[in-house]
Length: 110
Length: 115
Image (cartoon, rainbow over all chains, first blue to last red):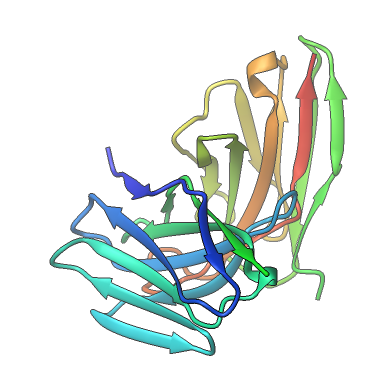
């Protein structure tokens, strides 16, 4: 059974701080790694994806991938109250399907 | 572009009733997916269609059927609804399943309650 694990939170950070979200996965054959953001009552929306070991930056967001440790993370710099949401980690393999973690709820306090 | 659209947005059924959830995408994507999301369970794949004319079971297919009507449309049918099917249902689509970085885009969801 392929699994994706995330700490459910809630993770609470003050405005302006760095939020660090973590994800581990079980399938070593996984090729693509995604972070989605989901506001309450809304659908998941893509933040970014990563497929090579190392860091990938997009604005205030940085995704980090370590395939040897089967670990993906998302850093949010200068966190804003509007970043308060549930963050879903998803892992894809050659079949095309994504396996989602249960999500980490992030709360950014003004 | 509307992206991925779903109808209806909300639905209340009685146990044993049937209904069809509709999904359409205008991004010329090849693959379409149906998920359900329950509190504490995350997103779970019900069925998917890798290309027009094909459908396959996902993690939780029991109690559901699907039809890939054409490249744009993918419907999910509940033949005899049960309270355990109370959930939020999301449809998603992607262009090239299995290719590195292929991204799934989600519709707004259907909130279904079965009494």
